[in-house]
Image (tube, rainbow, N blue to C red):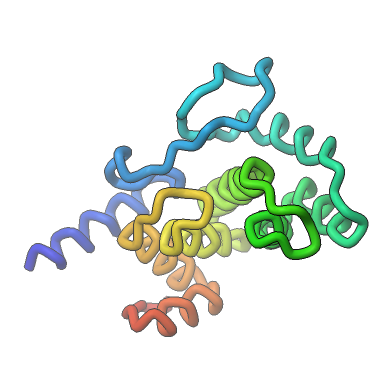
Length: 177
């Protein structure tokens, strides 16, 4: 019964508010900001939409290997999957030198895009799915499987088949509209 109450509370939160805020702000990841000093004070904090331009400029100034330059351009243009692919490359060292700060920069930008797209909904509902996967797996954010599942279910209910497939692969129920 408690699980059902929790699920209903999470559903109300997702349907009634933006995608960027988990129900308990203590569960939301705060990251060491990678933005330049002129953007906002340094320190641990949640990133917001105002950081998008600063992070995009930071990405544009990176010396990205030729093989990843197209991904970086697509990332700055708003392609979440390109940003996450670059984050994964820098995390694992595929095609680039491993670099935790650059990894986090790309995950931060992915998260900002996903939050924006999730809040917009409609044809951008895949932002909820992307954000859900990030929370479910703990990629670039503090892992929160419950919040990740909620966001994935929102993406699935909004018509994102990839979110439905992800939920099914994890053995989680979903209700597609």
